[in-house]
Amino acid sequence: MGLETLKVPIKGLRDKTHPSLNGKSSAQSMHSNRSSCSSVSQCSSMERKSNLNDESGTRLDTDDIDEEDESGQNILMNIISQLKPGCDLSRITLPTFILEKKSMLERITNSLQFPDILMDAHIEPNELQRFIKVVKFYLAGWHIAPKAVKKPLNPVLGEYFTCYWDLPNKQQAFYVAEQTRHHPPESSYFYMIPESQIRIDGIVVPKSRFLGNSSAAMMEGLTVLQFLDLNEKYTLTQPNMYARGILFGKMKFELGDHMIIKGPNYNADILFKTKGYISGTYDSIEGTIKNNAGESLYSISGKWNDVMYIKDLKDSKNGGKRVLFDTHTSKTFKPKVRPLEEQGEYESRRLWNKVTNALAVRNHEVATAEKSKIEDYQRELAKERLDSDVPFHPKLFRKVDDPSKELNFYIYKHIPKGNNYEAQIKSILEIAPILPGQKFTHNFETPGYKKYQIEEEALKRHSKG
Image (tube, rainbow, N blue to C red; front, side):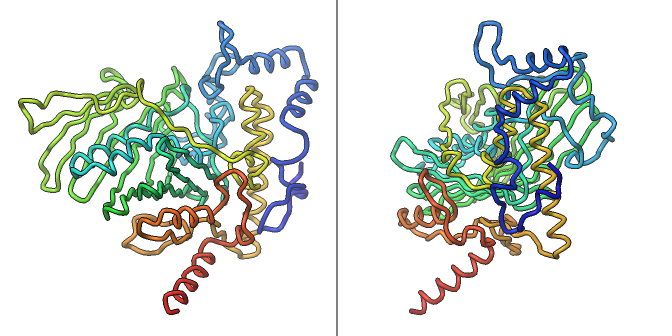
């Protein structure tokens, strides 16, 4: 499909021109691709890529498979010519072999799959123990990742993702995310459990770098956690991510460097230790919890993808090491997502549907072609915005130029304060469709900053009245 067939109004896409929503289905495309094999060896190669069962016949998840080309070399050898030490990987075309079957906007929810720990922290009366449980919550989610070295899909500008959780105590949690910037890529998100007065706002800013035989995602984002009824706020940074062995040797994923968690009166510095060339071990962490006077209170150790321990440094008699979190016995709460047919054109799962379907059967030819269509379309839209001098504005978030705020973007919607959780849920569901059966509002495509201004004016009129 040529770019000339992709021109549509910038305000919104139309199904008849959107490359990921029309034409042949993924299954039809893959059958067509299979039928047009130029040789027996090519077809055999495609059949091997589509073999998704292990020796016992168990169905494999392609996110858990490390891909190699036919010569046995690492899959990233085909992009060596593009790489220079220290270069920005956002400018590099990466093969679909290493892509996870989800967008970064959905990948963020991995860290939110332990709401029980968060709700337990909220009701903890002791401030120090509450802080420890916040640390536990934030450490708990890092092990949720593909077994193989996989990179989530880069969200396109204006892409969004929503989901929800039905919690055991009959409460609900809600999540909204949008790609608010492309260069550098910034993913903004909002999460809330209204009945527990728990709110999280955050931004993920992965700055990719090529480091010889490794690639790195330097995570410059920030998470802001609030217990609203306690008037308590925590800020949490993210460890950096490394893919080792991308040119030679066995590929390995590592978390590295410091993660800092700050509360009103306590802070934690957790070091994710990377393995050295000669000594050391994979996936280990060590850290300390201190009060604001700088006094060390607890130490943290273990492995972020195994068992993590905590030790009370002030209790010499009973301060033995105890388990803080065990990834093997923990229970995750996976988010729920509306059916694909109810989703909008720029909603992550619908936008990338043909790509992820192809990845699921290891048909990387189709995955690459469908991914290229989406990316080419985005380049066309970017050119139209540039030519028309029309800047991009996100629909669900608004930019905040306030030095007292921790983040650049916040959800545009005014969420009522206090413990009127029913009013809070109503406001959240007005942001975007989250629950099955919800419809899009008439002003959904309106930029978030404009919707915020309209709401502010209405609130002022209401307060005067």
